[in-house]
Length: 133
Image (cartoon, rainbow, N blue to C red; front, side):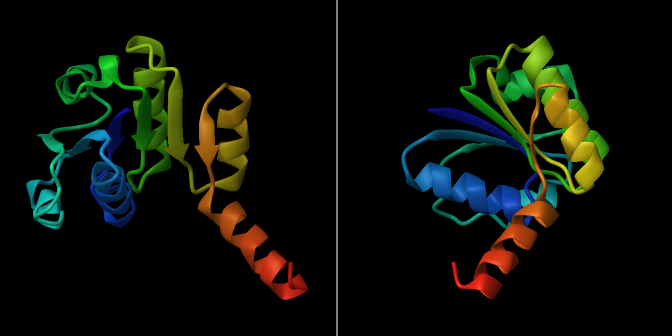
């Protein structure tokens, strides 16, 4: 499968590295060149320097051909905007955006984006651990 990931922070690097090691085609976008230096030497994917909200930068990363686009940067607004560009301008069917604000995540879900909210996920895991399930 082809994946494009916006954000080469801890989460983006981890997801990109895992997908690459599984044999998937991976491109990762970040506007800080130094972020790419933290990728392991074994990473065989493509790195694209630029703003992942920009339609042209997304195109350079292969978004129009991607099976999945993931917006995993640290800002809700950037992630939501990049996800919208990938979905509506590049026609990517599967788009995932990390959204920190729980209420915003719900609104984005209602607008058709797959919004992943770390707070809700961790809350559910903690509850499961507390009840032993």
